[in-house]
Length: 168
Image (tube, rainbow, N blue to C red; front, side):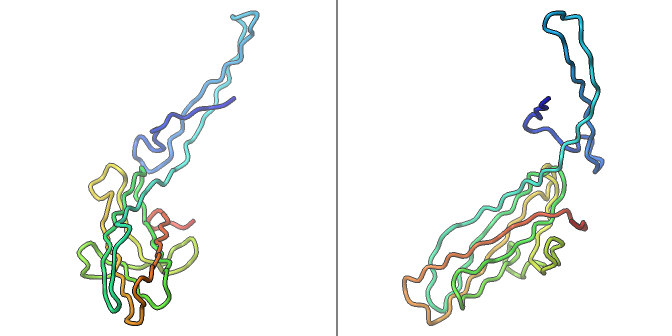
């Protein structure tokens, strides 16, 4: 038998931090004798789905020996709080990149990502219906003086999610 879970079904509808168990009844019936059937009780548990997005100002210009800032927003659509680890994958050798707080006054905090034991920038976000389900950050990019005009830099940010304080 196939069980179709409707879009928007919650893993933890009662918000107790534990995946809910849903009861199901399967019925097998005779096509010739509609009154002849058997029911089988079963249960299903929905798996947690970590759903988040990072949106960005995707392009800009910079002069040699210059600095530019690109704002980004990270938003959590999950039913549980997430720690979003951010990894910068530099595009051009010799350019410097920093991930900063929304106002640009400090670097984002760093912690060890339990998935690979590497120290990374992170942002903690509340569950989808909380006041702190999104956060803004900035990427500060410095282009060195020897960069020829017309050089293109393609830098990416890898965002991975984990539950704050958990291990995989």
